Length: 132
Image 1 (cartoon, rainbow, N blue to C red):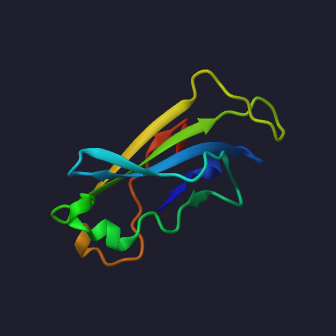
Image 2: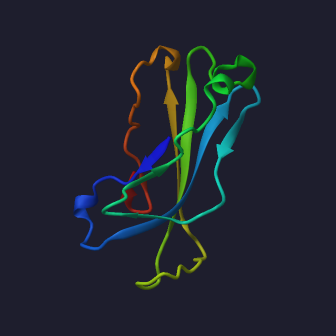
């Protein structure tokens, strides 16, 4: 599962976007989101690196096991929560801000079991004045 910053052509030369993000899958049996995140790290999106992610979000056997509640009647729900970190100046230091820009996107996938391609892009969503 990967997060990609879109429409980078409209950004100024030398742009970079720093973000912290978490992926999640919805457990329909327990009515809760299960998150997958390594250590909280600020990741830098820039012209040479517009996407970050987790190559193996969840083990396929675990995902397909009905008792886990992720895949129910061929439907599952994935999502991403994104925190955009604003730089206070050009450099390597990041400062915490009082009210970080936050967005959450939920992507419900119907008939997941019948999907055959290697990847499926979600619809574009806006977070922190950027398209993802």
